[in-house]
Length: 219
Ligand SMILES: [Zn+2]
Image (cartoon, helix red, strand yellow):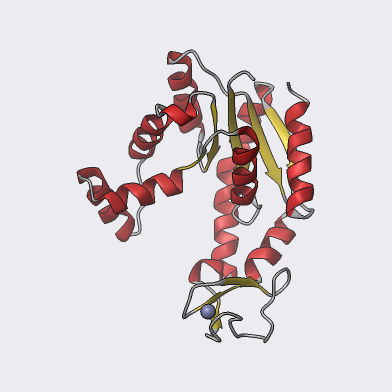
């Protein structure tokens, strides 16, 4: 198979991470999440990692420059020779253009961009239903994956709570940020003829099938 360079665009709660890891197994190409790259660099305690940690702790966003540095060196690794699945990148047009240039330098290009479409109401429901165990960290969802006893962890009987990020006001704010940054990207890739939409409203398996159908349509 030819090189397969995939970009996933989708809101928090769209099922992007789960789909990415299934596609990664299916096509035997790495799932590269910029969030993971940032966490790994911090864990390494490298000079760059320490710098990033300071930024993150102060509540600021890691700069475009640093995110791209991490990503571009990750793309050089052997396992990404035949392709990759990008999750969390690009987040804006500047990053999209930089990625395009970088790939072109290597004689590569993006094969397809999958836009994971989920209506706002559904995203809100998924996120507002999320509960976490304060003892062991297990994640539940009162709608799709409820604990056996309300408010209690199945594994350790710990109390379940709503994470700060999942509170209604903050979810609304995250949604706005997502829409304002993603709409221009969707347009950007649509104009290049690279965009495929996948409605992520079914089960994990159904969504996976839809994504495969969308991908085969361009090959
Ligand atoms: Zn627990």
